[in-house]
Image (cartoon, rainbow, N blue to C red; front, side):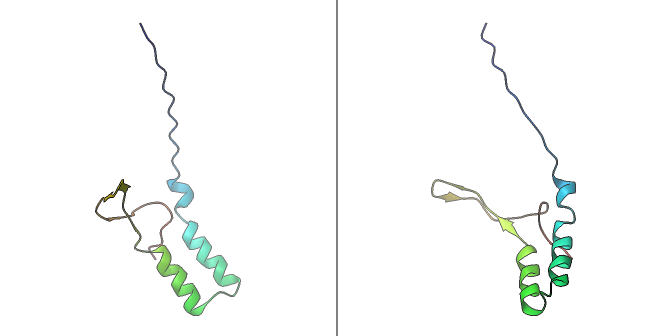
Length: 72
């Protein structure tokens, strides 16, 4: 009988990223970053999408609902 082992590690990073963007934006503002640049950074972090490519085929774009995204 052949035995094969598989090791799997699951790490839940959700809590780690819950407030990353909020803290990042507050920190950037405290460093004097404001105006159009801060608006651009907020925009860059919000309403993100991703898609997967396999060879030359692409999946449909999907909204990113977790991770480092900004929603406020």
